Length: 115
Image 1 (cartoon, rainbow, N blue to C red):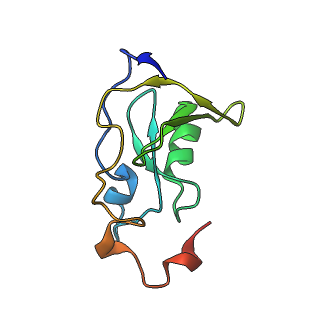
Image 2 (image 1 turned 90 degrees about the vertical axis):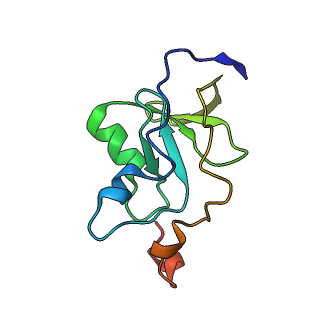
């Protein structure tokens, strides 16, 4: 990894912002961080695919995994995974946050709801 990217904003929270605003509340499998604005959205395997929806609606084309132990980036324009600079912390969701999560929102049959 290279030096910290000074222009990156901090993450918008520790969970998917859009799932947290839904009624009823949503849940996610994995989380992704927008490099441009810090928006935390759920991955494409999650029922609502908010990270990609955010990229489509804003034009913010680069994300980073927001999962513990993962530091890969993804460019929607090129469909390529790459190594990028270190972004400002935190670098992932809390380790104690379950996958899928949040625990109180995940249905028993959650596997059938994945994309």
